[in-house]
Amino acid sequence: MTRTLTLRRPDDWHLHLRDGAMMHAVLPWTARHFARAIIMPNLVPPVVTPADAAAYRDRILAATPRGSGFRPLMTLYLTEETQPRDVRAAAEIGLIAAVKLYPAGATTNSASGVKDFSKVRRVLETMAQVGLPLCVHGEVTDAEVDIFDREAAFLDRVLDPIRRDLPELRVVLEHVTTTDGVAYVREGGDGIAGTITAHHLVLNRNHLLAGGIRPHYYCLPVAKRETHRRALVGAATSGEASFFLGTDSAPHTDAAKLQPCGCAGCFTAPNALSVLAEVFEAEGALDRLEAFASLNGPAFYRLEPNAETITLERAAPEDVPAQIDTEDGPVTVFDPGMALHWRVSGG
Ligand code: NCD
Ligand code: ZN
Image 1: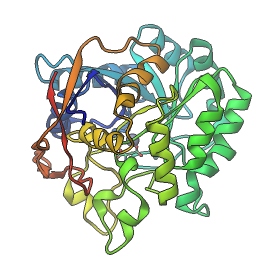
Image 2: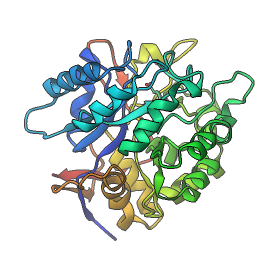
Image 3: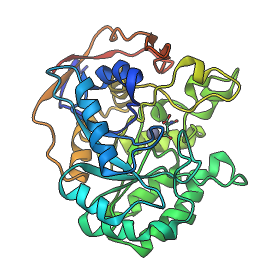
């Protein structure tokens, strides 16, 4: 049985770091395992201008533990007012690595998102010209569409028309949760990739809803039925270049999660790699973990993979706390509901 596994240092291609006290509490958990992360811009107010992104990057760097070498890869939050020239300039100086599209109202802090897609066409055209990826939260928001069908509906109604109109636009379909999403990415050629979270590899909707509601498993897109989870495991462990890790680690205080209208998001930064190792081992695919966590993402984003390595060891599980304390209150760490046998033993 494999006991140790050395990988190029992983990156996280979808991460919520928040700001202020929350950021100070959660950032060290990402920085200890990951070299880089695509930083989501859904702050309140959102990160919409290059100046916002530069200021947020500087706050992140100031909060990064010394010596970790962690590098935030910044994004802009696409609104109907986003200026093509700002996007072009920010991409050209390397300030941003992507632009994020939230359909208005799709998820936490997405009120400023896009309602009328014709209003962002010029920005998307500019991104296609400069090769800047569009990260998409792929769910429609129409009240009449069932929440479990929102990803599939988004592919048909929104994403496919955009990609037909602008075939050169490079797209990351983030946190894929359905067989439809997996198939769409697989059939889409080099210009589209999909990120997959650690939690969607282990959760189906029964874990969320059967035998009692589990608010800490509520995230968006919501976990789907088991056949979809199996498709995600198949995609992640396939080694195919178009699938890579984006944890979507999304911390909320317990007070914000445990209330009549609780927030969406799972805080997985502390144990995402242990969860992945468990899933890949069960599939007999540990030799493909490096592709998923460390190689495919940089290749899509046209960056070098990290030169450093980390070593995972099959040993007593990592001592991850059930909760972390923040000045805003406790944040519960994702509980995968299974024993974890792998720990990160060295960098
Ligand atoms: C994210 C958050 O809390 O910011 N929540 C989530 O459930 N994933 C927003 C998002 O990425 O949808
Ligand atoms: Zn997210």
